Every structure is written in C-alpha cells, then in structure tokens.
Length: 408
Image 1: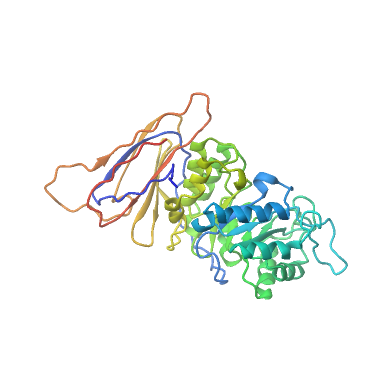
Image 2: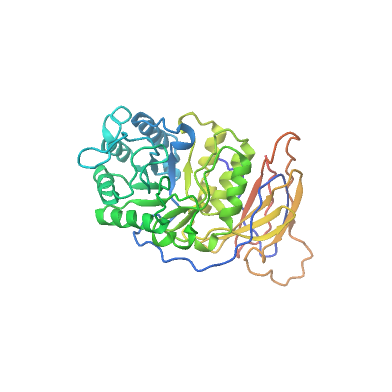
C-alpha cells in the first residue's frame, strides 16, 4: 500500500530540505524531564497496534462485531502489518455483578462470553483487549473496578484477555496514582501478560509516573472526528517525548482515520501519531473502510517509523510562524523527519541534515546545494484546517539528495 503522508528516502549529510506544504498542525518545543522507572512486565516494547470499537460504535459492541473485525484484520493484511489487539470498549457487561462479586458479560451481546470471544480472536492469531474504569462505575454507567481490582483482574486473566484499557470515570476523588497502581498490582498477581493502558485523560501529570504503572497513558482528553481536536491533542502530546520509551508510551488517543475527516487530514493524523511513537489503535469500522483509508492504516513504511525498536518519540527541532520540523531517531542510525505547515496557505519549510541529527556534510569542491522542493496544493477556501504532513528518513551514509514527491 502507498503512504500518502510519509515518504521514505535516503538523504545525504549535505542535504537541505525545502518543501512546499499545505495546512498542518503545530508542534510544541520539548523540554526534557526525568522519566519514571518503566513497568517491568516485558510487554509493549513497541507501541501497541490494534483496533477499538468505541469511536465508531460507542455502546453497540457485540461478539459478532469483534469476531468479524478479527477476521478482517487477517484477510486485509492488517494483521501482517502489525495490528494485533482487538479491543472491546465500554458496555460489554451487565448492569450488576453476580453473587460472587464478579463482572458478568452481557449474554445478548456476548453469547459465548468474553472467554469465547477471546478464544476466537486467539484462533485468528490475534489478541483480545477489554475495558474497565478505575471508579465505581464505567463512563457508560456499568460496574467499575474501584475496590474490585483483584476480582476483576482474575476474571480478565481467566477469560484470556491480553490488554486492558482502564478509564477514569466515577473515581470518587481517590488519587489517580493510587487507583491505577492498584490495578497494576492486581494484573501482575494473575501471572497473565496483559498490556495495561491507563486512560486518566492526561490528569495528575500522568506522564511523570505512568511508566512505573502502565504500558501507556493517555495524555489528553478524548479525541473526536474534528481535525482541530486532532491538532490540539498533537500539540499537547508532542512536548512529552522525554517520557516515552520501550514498554512505556505517551498515548494521544485512538485514531479517527476513516471516520469522516478529509483524506489529507486522515493522512496527517496517522503520520503525526507514527512520528510520535503513539499506540496505533484504529477507531473505525474496518469492515467498511475504503481503499484510501486502508492505504493509510496499512502503510508499512509509516508503521515502521512508529514501531522502530529504538523507542524514541519524535521531537520538534523548529517552530516558526506555524511551520514545524519534527525528527525521530531510528535504531539503524537513520532519522525520520516530518515537515509540517499548520497554516491555510502553501509555505516553504526548510531544514538541514545536520539539524535533523545527521553528521555534518563533508568538505568537497562541489557547488551543488543539495536542495529539494515539493509543492503541495492549498486547501479549498471553505475547508477548516486541513493538513498535510511529509516525512523523510535520512541516513548518515547516503550519497545523494532525495527528490520530494508533492502532497496529494
């Protein structure tokens, strides 16, 4: 599949890039801070990839939907591209616990229970995720896990759950870290490897302690199908790069790609999340996704940037007048570079290999500038904040400048 928002090329150490781009969201400057000790559960060494039902379906989750999505991840090639978690969000359970105090899967939505659904998902070579809240009730009003952490963790493990998204509704003012650590310990006690995704909406400076508690932590409030929200979340998340590392990731929320934004906005959304080493959790009905949407979700070159084993989140090296340059070092010594224009008109963004973290150019007698340019069309006059992102991967050993493709 082709990638609309990222392109990969080899850059020479002498290369200076100048790209004409259209309408991309802003970045904030990173200030390094000491990260917390990472949770030592050996999981999520690269950002988790998968699917979650909430953005597209809300409370209308069923066993059939989950199983059909698992089938589609396999048949479409997305499983091969790295998507492995099929995650159930809120509303999967009945409104009351059983007499033993355990959560009960809704027998209408999940006639084979969560264990039956997990068995099916596992048979497809995938993993199952589930949802709860660190409060007395979930956000939709179903029984929460506050005070029931070990009971619920034991249920999840017995059912074959591989991933827990743990929300923040109805928390009764119990401190965040206390509530989330209680479920961390309960999950560990089960002995089952379960990726632990904290969803406290970026409160209590979760990035300063999240790595010692979970495998990822939400850094902001919820995303929605509005590119201005995507932009706002991006600005908040990008400045937290110092806290991300293998097994511990900043989470700017699920992807809205395919849910109604323009293709250009979707493309930029996916590119930004990948450059920021964010979990890539599809939030659309993949069974009905267009070829264009699948070209974004399935682009292996873009995914490779997100999944790079070095585990570095991209940081901003330049920000002026709504024009931004973001770099992400990769395990093989290359650097992924994103150039961003948040404005409503075409602009030129320039950087150099040295600024991007590559070795300075060797002294030669050549007079060639090594400059490349790319033209991107301006957005239609009536569209609000559409975005285009372009990226290169630069290598210290590259011998020639790259040519840049125009945004489409």
